[in-house]
Length: 117
Image 1 (cartoon, rainbow, N blue to C red):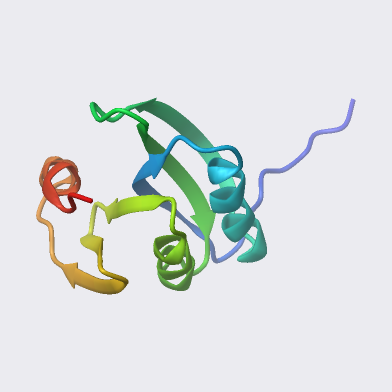
Image 2 (cartoon, rainbow, N blue to C red):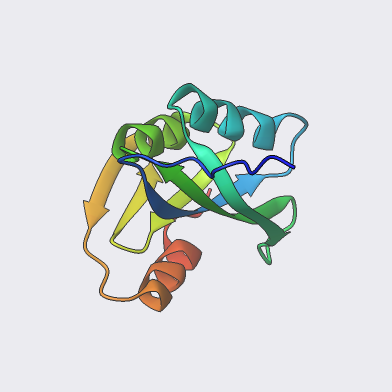
């Protein structure tokens, strides 16, 4: 019996939370960006966001650099907002802003109130 080692290297785990429109191919596009940045999805949770036609997606991604990945995910038209525990990134009219968040709960609260389309 062979033992397969998990993906090991300079990569770290990063949590990314999205509010994503429920459209065909939306999640596929997000995961495509993760793949193109050599990221590996360790955990994926999709739940209702409390808004009709929008889901909350929580990704735990193993990647060496998640900043560029998050910026590209933010550019997708179907992404309403994005948050990370160490900083909040919001889409507002195509612009990207970053502010510090002290706790994961603060990040979740900020995602809920970031953007109204």
